[in-house]
Length: 210
Image (cartoon, rainbow, N blue to C red; front, side):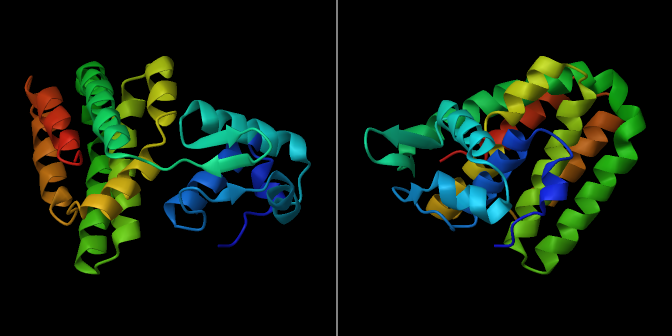
């Protein structure tokens, strides 16, 4: 996996960028459950000091993605069925609230939602599972951003959605190829300001749950 250049890391907080780098590594299988994440090695690879790496690891521990054991350092958690069973109802609830807040504003975002979904359909046709996952999450992020609630956005981002979705796909072989059809139905519901659209989004997210 290619490390992002330091210049790219400097665009926002180093710790946040490093956290994203580690999450992508776990999602891609670079670090498996139980495997140690070496702070010094990441700092060297990215060309940064160990301070922001340490902060990124603290954030990931707070998100329950890694654990720090005495005298053993940071390791990727061994994710359980219970973890997966708990994360998706929380995500679904957040996105339902986001859709309720965003519904009056989504008319101006139809083009962006349709473009995300067009690319998702193309990725599905090409059997590119990684692209499908990222484009699907981008679609959902568009809705959450449109809600205009910074706290809700921060909590949603803090769930580590890309990683948990990847784990669900890996462990349960959750199918994703039909998601573009579900997204198309959501777009039409948003377009007509359907009051049932938030519940539709909630149920759509729960389809990822084990």
